[in-house]
Amino acid sequence: MSLENARELYIKRSNGDSPETFSTVCGVRTRSLQMSNAQIDTTIPDCDDPSAPIVATAAPGRQTLTFSGDGLFVSSDSGVAVADDARLQRVTNYQIRVVGYGVFEGPFMVADFELSGDMEEKMAFSATWVPTDAGTLTFTAEA
Image (cartoon, rainbow, N blue to C red):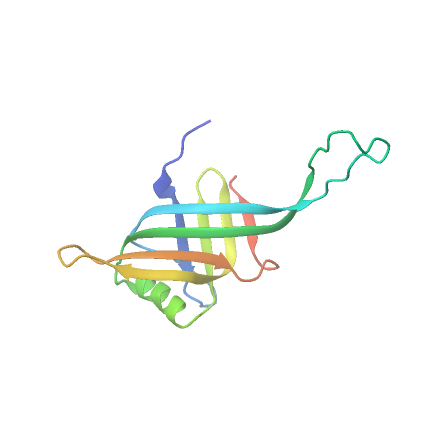
């Protein structure tokens, strides 16, 4: 068992060429990958003893996967391309790489994108990516 570095949780953007190559989205300082599962209530009261305590049960429902990051905006090819993906509502292939776990890959949209800063600081950005097609989203476990 080993502890992993948070900086090795990162996102890469496809250049859209064939063959496809991916470039790291530069400048990301804090990042998070969230996987959540909605719950479908499957609770059924005891038919033989309706007065018995009811135990809640659930089944997995809709799954949500989001990657978010923020940091300093780097006006490199990948930084400008991410901003353009948001502005143009463009769906692009991305890879979310999680050291010690694996890689999610497929079409993502930039759901939220913000540029901000103080007049005496470097420009910062914040972005959130969500997959657009569960049928083509893949996960490859780390070997």
